[in-house]
Image 1 (tube, rainbow, N blue to C red):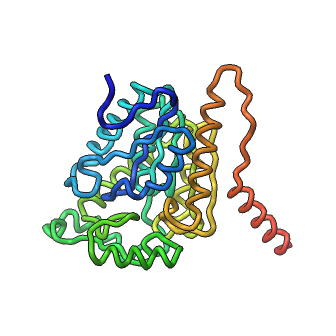
Image 2: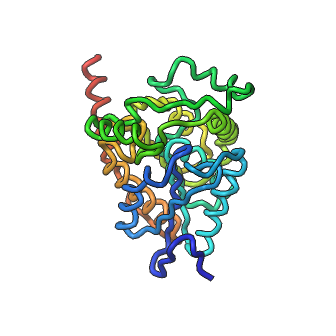
Image 3: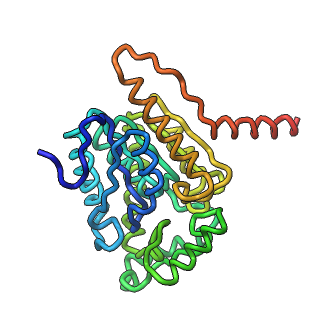
Length: 294
């Protein structure tokens, strides 16, 4: 029986579950979803009750259950099912991979295990305290520039959208204290169990991420239990890498990694190594800096 929540393509064998950021919408991952679809993958970007914008607030355990249910529904139709997440959606993707080792690959974009980027307000630690006071129902953290975007033209567009609406293509205008509290609980759970993740793992992170510093990506890279891990650093983007200057690089690297992961799984397969252009460029830059320092 076909699941009415997503289209089933009989000729495809690899589906990708895409998880957007906290209190946001599938619009954040629209470009990547379209690119992967054009490359022959099936994509499914659901709204999750209690996590997505406009669906209320629930404990993070229910976010995980909802995402796992979406993953299981895809598994009923496709040989390979991978998970791609952005920001807190990447953290949620990691949690699903912990629950479902059958995930072919996980793609962690701007993974957020700590809100420790350079643009985070000095008072962020107070949000933890506010949750346990009557203020938690009245205080909301409002998003400010740069809105996760290095691209100034797009940033201006988003600023105008934020003034008129509660949601934009790069996320919500504000986040409640309750949502931030549950997000921190989810991140803590994932940090403690990274070694349980065995699925092939791609980590893409901006070196100038203003929301979650590069430490988040390094933490995953150093502790994840996967045997196949690739980390790609971006140098012309901020947090919202699915919409910013290097979105084409992000989408292309996701597709390449998914293909390589599936090829390595095939019996008697000898996949050709895929060289990441973004990674190669960054390595050349680092090598140049090292030579100048000598």
